[in-house]
Structures are given as structure tokens and as C-alpha cells.
Amino acid sequence: MKKWKVFVTRRVPKPGLDLLEKECEIEVNPYDRVLTKEEIIRGIKGKGGLLCLLTDKIDKDILDTEPKLKMIANYAVGYENIDVKYATEKGIPVSNTPGVLTDTTADMAWALLFSTARRIVEGDKFTREGKFKGWGPTLMLGQDITGKTLGVVGAGRIGTAFALKSKGFGMKVLYCDVKRNEKIEKELGAKKVSLEELLKESDFVSLHVPLLSSTKHLIGEKELKIMKKTAVLINTSRGPIIDEKALVKALKEKWIFGAGLDVYENEPNLEEGLIEIDNVVLQPHLASAGIETRTKMAIMAAENLIAGLKGKIPSNCVNPGIF
Image (tube, rainbow, N blue to C red; front, side, top):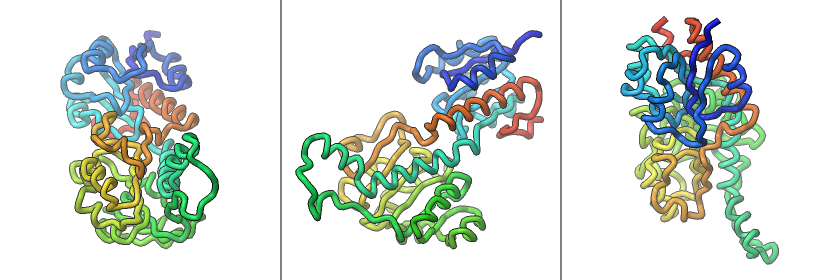
């Protein structure tokens, strides 16, 4: 039986590649870096399938390059890196990997919340540099978490999982979303409010919205000034949700207590001045970086790709209307 030819833009966990190799002839990017557009174009030449990452911009130019391209599997929940509208016009199914990284991403948001509120990174650095000379009543005071108000911006899968994990801390939960979330209302007594009210009342604000034209710079100077001076802002969604220039100013001038970031507006580049600020915890886009989770993502992407190549509707097809 003739195997489909597939290009993988970056090495993913082995179980996913093993699954592909059973039914496909695969070529994997040999470099541990993001490929250029030209390299992707060369890679998909003669290929029927493409497994790509959120860091790969799959635009009209690339989609027009290879007429044999039959299926695109994105190794991510988001798929704004792909021109899905144009892929749909060309009859190419596109899939993503939702669900499997929900709890892992929510866990990271909590890790950032604790790290920022209790100044964990600052304390670690302080201790390693030999500055710790003994316990002191005012040494590196942070923000208490138990019993405080938690604001969840975007109550989809990840936002819901994040909110539910607050149960053990007896927190008041506010959420802002276009839809009502009865699950967190029932289980947590959560209250649906406007973004402005959420920002005014919350001690901790965590962002869980997709990147859309309506959510770009959802948090800017105006919103940061609304927040409490003791508040902590967490972002594990998409970098451009926050106006990073405004955030640098807010952190430097102490409009808010601190921020925990896993994503950046111009990733992998950081806004000038951000790296020098002590009251921000910075992570290199690791929210889904659990061994089990990343493996499940690889398997799901491979299954989606194989299904699409066989002419079946992938389980996680984002443009099923083409079928």
C-alpha cells in the first residue's frame, strides 16, 4: 500500500511520530527551531499532509505552493497561525488539539499566580545570591491568596478548569465571558460580571480568552489602572491580549502588585524593560509542557492527520463544513 507523505515542522514527542510512521512516510524538521517560510515551502513539496505548530505561520503563500496538500494538523489548541478561511476555500481540513491540555494549562496559571503573589522567583534568587541572613518580619512580603477574590476572564474549558481549582482556597470567583457558565456558578457560586467590575474587584485576574480582533489589547493602560494596586495579573492565553508596553509601565510604576506571564505580545521577543522588572514572573510558553500532555497532543495531532488523509472528518476539525 502506498503511504501518504507528511511533513512535520518540528519534532514532537515520539509516540505521535511512531503513529504517523505506521501509515505515512514522514519528513521531520531536523532543526530544533522555528522554520522560515521558505523552509516550510520546501518541506511540504510533494506532501499530502502537514503537522505544524502554533509558531508556524501557514498563510496563503504556503497553501498555494503544494497542490497535493490534503490535510493540516495543528499541534496546539489555538489555530490563528493558519489561514483557515483560505484553507477551507481550497478544501483542506484543519485540526487542532483541544481538551488534552486543559488542566495542564490551568495548573500553570496557578503556578504563576502563587509564584507572583508569594514572590517565589525573587526569593529563590535572593537566597542563591547569599543575601538571606535569617528570618525577618518584613522580608519579601507578598499577597495572601486564601479567601481573596479571583477574576477569570474567559470561562471556556481552561478558564473553567482554572476556576474550579480555587475550591481549596475559599475564594470568591468573578468571571467575564460572552456566555453564562452554569458549572462554575453552581459549584463555586461564581458571579458573571463586566470586565470593568471584574478588574475593579479582583485580587487576582487570570486571562483565558482566544486571540481575536476583539480581544487584542483587551488589557491596556485603562484596564491596568482600574485594577487594585495589590492585584496580580496572570496570562497563559495569548500574548497580544495584553498591551505589553502598558504592562511594563504598570509594573514599574506599581499600578498593580505583579504579573505572571507565559506568553508575550511579540513572542519570543519581550517588550523592552520587561526582563529587568522584579515584580513579574516570566515563563517561556510552557503552559502545556507536561510530559503526558505534550505526548497526548502529539498522538491527537497524528490521529487527526491520518483521518484527514483518509478522507474522514478528523475528531478535532475546526472547519468541518468542507465535508
